[in-house]
Structure formats: C-alpha cells, structure tokens
Image 1 (cartoon, rainbow, N blue to C red):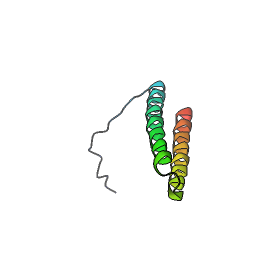
Image 2: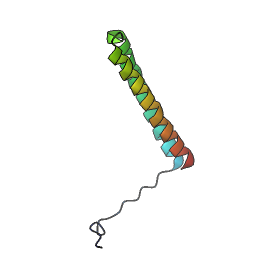
Image 3: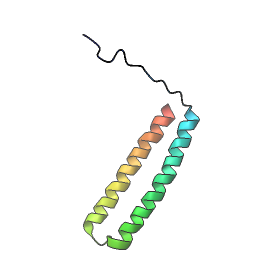
Length: 77
C-alpha cells in the first residue's frame, strides 16, 4: 500500500510539561472570565426563560468535563 503523505516534512514541537500547565492555567483564567460575563448576561437579561437555564447548565457541565479531561491528560503526560 502506498503512503501518500510520506514525503511531507514532519514538525516536532518540544514543549515542557510546566509550559503546558501555564498555558492551561492562562486559558482557564480567560475562559472563566468570559464565562462569568456570559452567565451574568444570562441571569440579568433572561434567566426566567427555561431554555436559558438548560443552556447554562449544559455550558457549565461540558466546561467542567473538558477541563477535567485536560487536567487528567496533563497529569499523566
């Protein structure tokens, strides 16, 4: 079987574990700030709507899951 991409150059990036932790922490701070603004907006301008409550719950649940996966991946890296 022929390998169609064998002649493409490969790129190797060597990033230390501490740099990845710093990137995750900086990303988390920015994400938490934007999320707080979003949640404030939802609660101030339409939280009485049931769909907004579902959207906020789904947003927070998926966020916690994704950050948990990232934390776990960096822990075992």
